[in-house]
Length: 362
Ligand code: SAH
Image 1 (cartoon, rainbow, N blue to C red):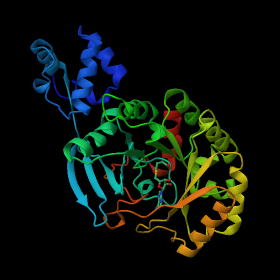
Image 2: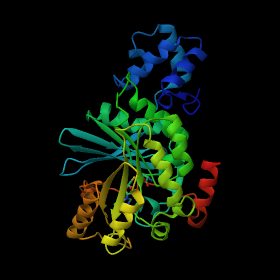
Image 3: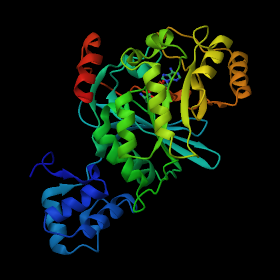
Image 4: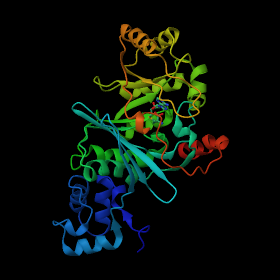
C-alpha cells in the first residue's frame, strides 16, 4: 500500500478512531489506546504501542500510519514567540506560531493553505487560496508544538492562515482531539475558533462543538465592513450579531471575543467606538483591539497608540471589557495577518471568493 492510500490516524478523533478499530475487527478501546499513544505520549511508531497485540500492530502497519508534515523552518523571535513553517506537500506550506505569555502559552494554528476571503488588511489574503487542510494537518500543528518541540500549551487559537469555518468538516474533529481527556485536555474556554463571520457555519458550530468563538468584526457598520471584510456583503451585521449572541446564549460565563484591527483614520474614531457600543448592546462581549501589523504594499497604517487607548477607554466606559492585543513576533512576520506560508494559488482572485464559498457552504 502506498503512503497516500494508508489511512492517516491523525485525521481521526476519538469517535472516528473507535469506529476505525471496530471496522478492522479490533475493539473500540484499542482506538482509544492508540489516540492516547499518539497525542498524549507522542508515539507514532506502532511497534512502540506495547499494549497492542503483535498481530494488531502488524495489521496497522499495513493499512495505517501517522503522517506528519515536515518542519522546514523553525524561527524563534526575541520576545519568546516561535514560528514554524510546515511543508504539507510539494506546493503547500503553512505556518503555526507559539506565543508564551506569563503562565499561558498559546498556539496559533492554520486551517487552510492561503485564504479565499480577501480581507483588505490581511497578508494571508494576498496569497490567494489553494486548499483546505485535513484534520490531520490541523492537529499535527499541535502535535509538533508539544511532542516535537516540547512546548507546553494552555490555549489553542484557530487564528493562523485561513478561514476555519470554511473548512468546517476538518476543523471540528481536530478541535475535538485538542479537547479530549485522552490527549491534550484543553477545556472549551481554551480552544478558540476565529471567524470572519460565516453565519450559517456559526449556527452549525453550536451543534457540533463547544469551543470559544472569536469574530473578526473590524467595523461597526455594513458600509465600512463591506470594504474591510468582503464576506460581510453576503452575511451583514444584522445576520452576524444575532448568530454570535445565540452561540453564547446558554452559558453565562461565555462571551463573544471580537477582534478589531486598528487602522489609522479608517475605523478608529470615537464615532466608530460609539457605533460599536450600540451594535454590541445586549451581546456578552470582550473586545480585542489589534494594532494593525503592516506588510509590504499594505494600504493602511497602524493607529497611533493614544487613539487606540482612547478607543479602548470609550468601550470600557460602556462596560465592554477591552484589551489591546500586544503585537508579538512581528520581527519574524508571525503577528496577526502576517502569516503567508507558501501557497500555490489555484484560483483567480476575482473568482475565488464566489467559487470557494459556493463549494464549502453548499
Ligand atoms: N480568518 C479567520 C482567522 C484569522 S485570525 C478570521 O478572520 O477571524 C487572524 C486575526 O488577525 C483576524 O482577526 C484578522 O482579521 C486579524 N488580522 C489580519 N490581518 C491583520 C493585520 N495585518 N494586522 C492585524 N490584524 C490582522
